[in-house]
Image (cartoon, rainbow over all chains, first blue to last red; front, side):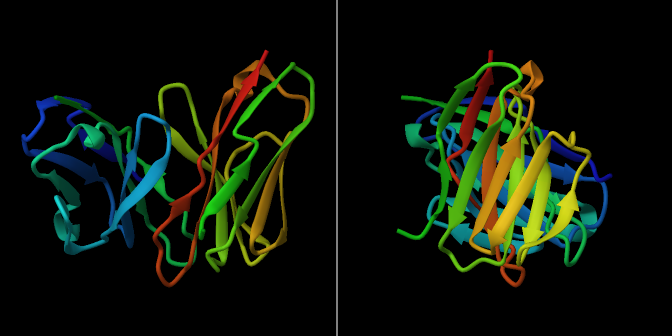
Length: 110
Length: 112
């Protein structure tokens, strides 16, 4: 099956800093999503981005499908950005199974 | 509120018992899923239903049986619970044409 690797596994930053999270995948995908799991366990969909670039406020994401990676940018970090960020990919049209990466744990220090 | 709702939020039970987790979505999505998150936070799909039809059944013990009475509901029944079943179980939904998932808030199952 497809392999999804995320880096770095852990990231500790001061409030206000910027960060880049990376997701590498081993095969062509037709579905790529970024999720944030907050400290209370809730999984929030950030982006559906199988290719191209999207922005939502302080967050943006870019997927370069031909090179099999995606990047999530967080600017001007806030303590509420803390949590685990997951990249998840899907490879089959008509079968919406997502394979998740192991996540990046982000801790923002005030 | 439009959402994916799971009940119960917490479930503590003894080994050998049978339990159910319920999930409902009012987003008009046609596909629903069950995912399991283990103690190391790894998320893995268990089942997927599209319009009440089972389309994904990963290698899950047959003690786990999903049931979808209609496309807005997907329940998970677990027989003969084992210690290793302790995890957080997430329900999610999506629509084929949109592909973005919406997750429920999770059910933390603890088997003692």
